[in-house]
Length: 325
Image (tube, rainbow, N blue to C red):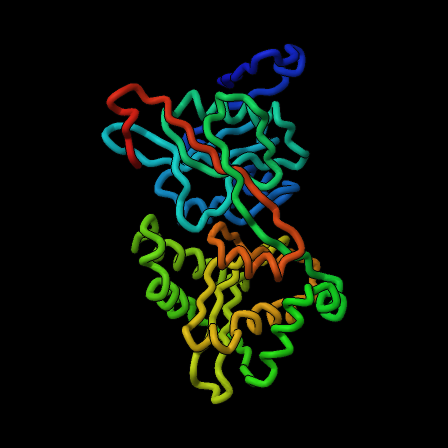
């Protein structure tokens, strides 16, 4: 049975056609799900079923009609309360569709989630534009810097800001080496060592799950690992693990060593990455950030900030309203 979640002041004839069904995980048609993501104008790797299976503790779905539009619902349970949460290493969720989603249709999905969960903290994606309805709860916009590739390195280099060009000119004297690498576990371990203290909401099991994602992608030639070494070819200065689908390169893990910062190794890393894929019609997705220093760097390298919404609501009764996930 479909359950239609009605919107206030919504045109009845159109409402009749929009049927959003809550589907438990065991009943999701993954073939239809992944076909929808593949054909969606806003399809992202995070919403593919294999990715959700490996990263999310649990996930169900909201589906419009026959998988015309879909929304993953990643959830946990605490004190008997099921709540929506944003898994580590899933930047964006929300509604995915072959056609552009209107704010009213998006509202229909959010109300469906609202009807099932009393507490939620989750992201939508860059093409989901919420309306102003207070029912949506608190809405924050998060940064995601991107650069479209495909026009060739010369054109891309000419579009760099003077700031980036100046830094690239400075680093040539360091004669760093850009190398392909295949050991994602080593890079993820390094990333964890360098930054785990800054990420209290990311647990050891999350890194294990990320390794599973990387293993699956590597088997399908969808994983890119690039290391930067000093002139001696031995000292590691920077590293990155990049996930790849047909539309994007996802900068999922990026590491910079203390000496690498001094030698501007991160500038060298991303310039070389751009050079490598400059002729491919694909988006380099820097994956954020809202951290001021990181955002400053990615903003300088990107050509646009493709912001996405973060939604939080809490309609639990007291004392559960004090619930912390």
